[in-house]
Length: 74
Image 1 (tube, rainbow, N blue to C red):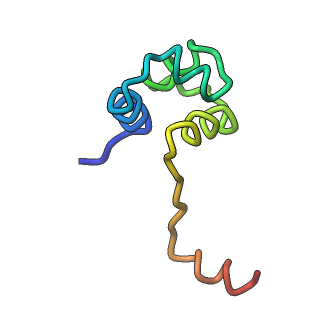
Image 2 (tube, rainbow, N blue to C red; image 1 turned 90 degrees about the vertical axis):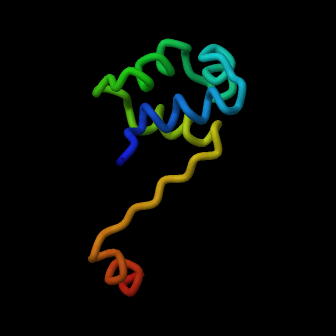
């Protein structure tokens, strides 16, 4: 089963023993942002989501068949 970002964030927050407010404070965002992410609101800015993921030590990995070519061009 593929987890959604909301499932991943909620799981990591709870496993870390953090309230939404505590995570929001750590990430430098409002507590409503955490609620919105966990409830799959579609208008979350990537930069805001990235702050939350960073606070939870979650890394994003981009994969595609073309990624090797991108690295070759760099």
